[in-house]
Image (cartoon, rainbow, N blue to C red; front, side, top):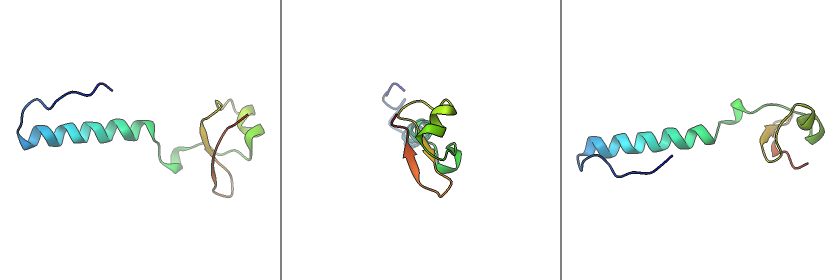
Length: 67
């Protein structure tokens, strides 16, 4: 996303800019319910999850694949 100034100083333009910003941030930070579920890093690797990507364990912990 490239940040830009609002099209005008009107409140509607500022609001539209904030909505766009929140939508962009949400696109890169998914909710926990959207994350894949794996038992451990080995299972995540077998599931082709990239190193550094998050996943959820069956007991509800959010982890990132480290190896």
